[in-house]
Length: 289
Image 1 (cartoon, rainbow, N blue to C red):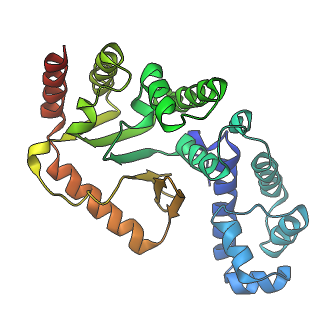
Image 2 (image 1 turned 90 degrees about the vertical axis):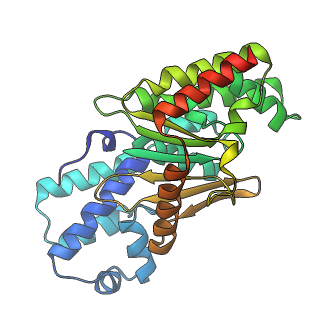
Image 3 (image 1 turned 60 degrees about the vertical axis):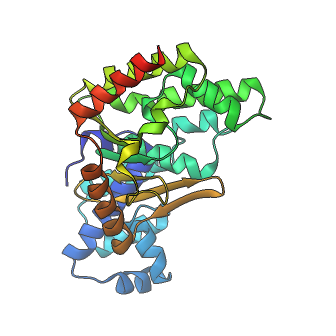
């Protein structure tokens, strides 16, 4: 039960890993979730939420689980350490004045994800935006926000981008977007040109893939809206994230995950290959010059 490198730091990573370990220990002990719930004196959903990393067991619950599963003392110490780390405050709390609670969860998942497949119909993926582009976007999306708050949102976006420089394993990012997204001169000519150049630079990275669906393609399966598909690792099921004006949605059901995986596969087929996508970005740059 060794931890992946990216699973050793953030509170949400500790919570996920603790849940996985407890699930494995329960299965090794030959117990069902319902049996464990009875022993703890809780409802079955409580055990399920702990194993999925949605909840953190209390110190008393963790002690009972260790005893129930006959966990050796050294491994019990490791479980306690994970639980303690899971209760720590994340770096995102620095931005809690501008970061909605539901979005804080996404940032935490993004930080520990192995890969992220992103589909956008109306804007460039946040992990690929320049500071100037992001600032111009926030000025339009949050016109009534104080300038200081918009600056904080830009800081947060740039901080999130550090996952692309993570060592030893950076986030594997695959971003697909519509051609018209690239033609929109957000922030004016200079900002627009710099943003397109940034995409070309990012495309050169081995762990970043950018594909563009040309306007000439017509209707396709992704027209009903953007979404992100996060792969946390072999021990965890993928998570679908959908961001809307009305709130953020997390889809973790097998059917939803399968549906969005299939949709993304179709989008990859509809989009230009990476090399051709790079040529299209270069063409748009020349036309906008």
